[in-house]
Length: 236
Image (cartoon, rainbow, N blue to C red; front, side, top):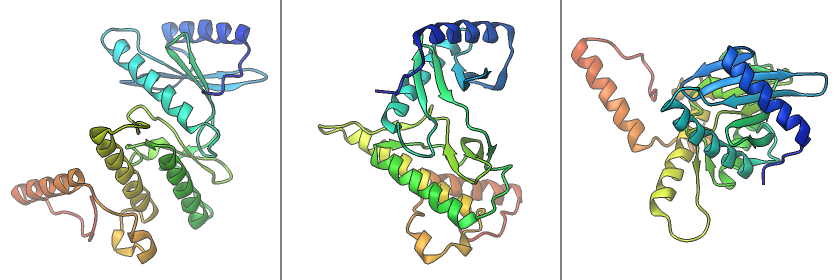
């Protein structure tokens, strides 16, 4: 199970705090279709609290996604590079450790090779646990700490591989998500200049049929509108 080590009295306090913060629109880290992300700080804790929006049907959909995300964190506990999760309080507030750092878009990497080797190791351990993130192309979902440690966040659309039995559709979706993750890693590492990709890293780049179809559609659209594609041998 997810490592829930918060005292029961503090859990109640945190639920009351999150309910008030959501109602009064305070303590926001971010806000989107999945709900609000709040930052809680005191002398002992620095926590991220993800809460669903107040209005139906978004609240219903977001609550389902948060329950799914909580199951993902259960699967990924004790992996370095994945924030520690304290569970889903009151069946609607997902509580995580706050990670100090910048998203990959804004970070200045001092040791790029080491960072990307660590990043790849997290992805491979995640896949070994049967989780495909599926949205690592978004740099906002990759945090970089001051010592260049990558952290993966936001598992709302992740795919959980089912254990035991025969699940062809689930296996297919997991394999697609796994390919998305590895393709994203290569594209981030080479800043989308995939013609510079080393032979060693080429093995991680295998576009899915969805990516190939999107590339073809984009090419046709730009051909018809007269918009030139950037000169990249293997861009999206």
